[in-house]
Image: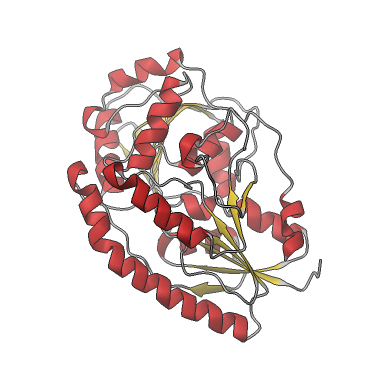
Length: 350
């Protein structure tokens, strides 16, 4: 290992999950004396800059992904946005090649950014979706994704290869790409035994407008409750604001350290069933209620899978009510099921 090597870490700006699961990777790189160059856009870049203010960064073209307000239009809207996403991927590829040519980058870790790679340096793609669920077009979308993955030197899947695992069929297709390595579930958090301060933590994330729609639903439902409720809005791109909405304490965003404490001191987490959230809650061994993003096949699949396994119940967004919380005690909650792989062992290729 050469301590002066610079590794580009570039998560997709699609909610906060891709950025947050890169945090333990960045920490491990720094611990091994690598230099790290951050690259992303929007709230993902804002979050990483908040976590690592000492690190240099570059801004990449935004994919500008947005969801429809209507579930049945989700796939159509994704298809309409695909040319824009491919254009952004092409633009980011040119930028990355220039950074490599300029000697700024010695290795690449891309979390789902399609164009962040270079044939001149070792390039890694991180994804938990080797099979991309898209309804009737799952076969096509999965084939296209695997085609992109094969262009990288390695594909790291943040899950365990053996059962039980967290991603199910998403990360464990019958024939994964040959460059696939299962690196274990990633989380920036550590479980701590702290006194319970909140009955419910409302943890919001994801692209608009669905993030705001869920915010409105949850704040309205809990405003007159006699329970202790904290709501984290998942909006790191501004100043940290704190206020009360009826009985609910609201904060615009939290740093990793603050959020780790908030989750550890909360009895039940109410959140999307995004994969990074699932990994975080498993690391902290928490009970939860999931509300999958309407129309997002991946989150709907994960919510149903974990419910069927007796781990976490779920409710659809349009049917959420406080009565749904009555199901939570009937489920065992999430936990890590295997020992973690040392990230430092994966860096030898750089």
